[in-house]
Length: 418
Image 1 (cartoon, rainbow, N blue to C red):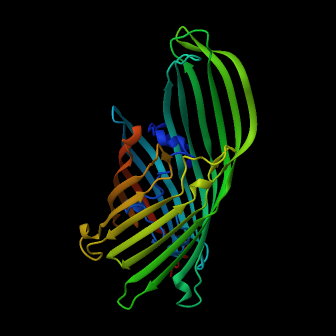
Image 2 (cartoon, helix red, strand yellow; image 1 turned 90 degrees about the vertical axis):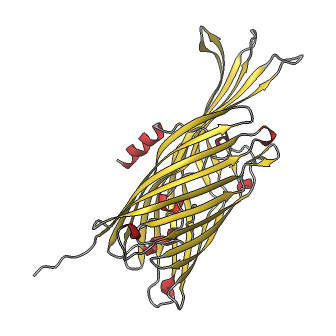
Image 3 (tube, one colour; image 1 turned 180 degrees about the vertical axis):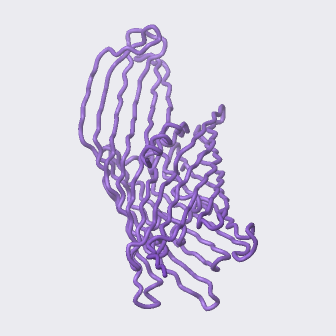
């Protein structure tokens, strides 16, 4: 049923981004609406009713006798513009399906289905007539999506008070999906030249591994300081590839293939970079939480299908800052709402025309408790900008609205009757 929902969400995805042409696409996807409403923080955040997939050590916060379920959706609007024109797009997608549950008092588990990246672009370059060639347009087109199913474990030693403050975890993910890319050369207002197109399809099937650590230090006044770390190993995503290279011409408004130059099937790989993240937090239990993260990714090591290192990819860092505030956990129903706000900044791993494609986002939201059901309804809103109009580049501005439902129920309890 979960896979059917994901298939439906893909069909509704219509958002285009020219920057998704680089790397494995647009990786700005939400793994949890609560964390997204706090600027995307994750490293030193753990709750017994929130499944934090981004740091597997956080699963240790799940209660020994509880089962946690989370499902999230997102829709958004994006404006893509240059200095001369602009266009609008819309998206609607499933962001996550997650489960968390205990195995033993020491060991907790999490399972999730989340997207990794989206690819939707169509761009072109025009070359004017010379002494050797007539004018032609070079068109770059691509689409696809990568998703992952993750199984994670967190271990928390309980043999003394100091050991209880630590937890370690690991996520093993199965990554799957398809990427389509094509490059077309089409001549303008001329005869005697055949257009040509190279279509490449990549079926991705691979495994990923993330390691996590969290430590929380209680203070004398009852407040808590926390730190968190995660490390994603540099791995190779195996792919099954198909290349189809052919020439064609237009006849009666239709494309007609003239000759097939190459049709080849072969194995390939995508070399993914390593990533390290760290974060700190300060918490006043049931009242205030403040956290900050920094992430560094070695994108210069990225390689797609043995094409070598891409000069348009640069090592990058990302900063996240967020907070959560509850007016009065013991007050009226409205006072029990949890309010979130955050900001994130990415200096950009894409480098074009002498500019990094940086991004800035602002987010806020709130969680609404549902009485007697152990359930929260979480709403998230985010506005951001990416890119620039300088040097003929493209600027994107977006607004996203997310909804998730988190259910926490008591399981694994042996009932006793008299």
